[in-house]
Length: 65
Image (tube, rainbow, N blue to C red; front, side, top):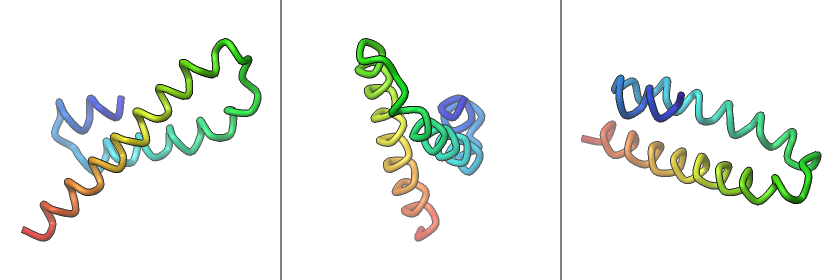
């Protein structure tokens, strides 16, 4: 959903908001995952975190210009 808002709809603020909320919520459940599922989940969470970092820096660059 975050990627849809950020990339497709062009609503960068909403995309970042959704990504941040999803990342924070995922941290609450991380300890309770089964070992077999945790690798896949960790990869998705890492991707979400990387998107947030990239998008935040991109938005900061746009605001400076």
